[in-house]
Image (cartoon, rainbow, N blue to C red; front, side, top):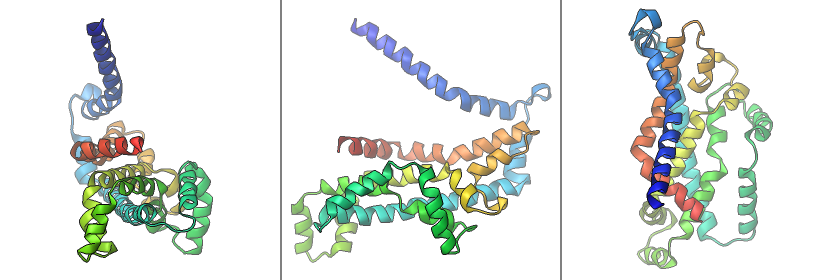
Length: 258
């Protein structure tokens, strides 16, 4: 009976993996095989070498996403440490409100963010995408639960050694919670890399659109070039997951346990 369950579990797992791989394999194969024309890498040459607008959008998107991920990691560390290690009036209430804000759909915040960015004269700039993305509640919530697990004895020992708050963060808190911090950075990067509504709402010129939005505007008469653009857009998430999959899983599991 146990052997039968293992076999069924293995078959089911293989089926799920196959279903997930089919779209990617279709994109990869279709970008190389040109039907009656046979195998051709012309579309790869067009996207990566001869047509600079694709790579320009790629690097622009990468710059925006790295800015969002880096900023969110800094804000999450500072805010999470404050919620975890300091007791002040309204601490629990503010943190509860932060958790409620995390459940709000993105579309609810588009109009308020648009009004604020318009008042700051940031509409149409890359800062209109970076600044709202930095102040997202998920990273703060994850880091708060992470910093709570650090024992008071370790913090007190650091204080006796003459460490201030900033030095405690750099020397003690961040090294202990490095896995969860990497998880916050990865989640924020992936969320920013896939954003669609924000660029359409906040950016005025088509040339400023990131790759996630511009993919929809690739000429439909050249399917191979469109598919290669999809592969280009998939490269950063795949590479990040390949290098940091353990930290991502560890951070998600830790957040679920808390």
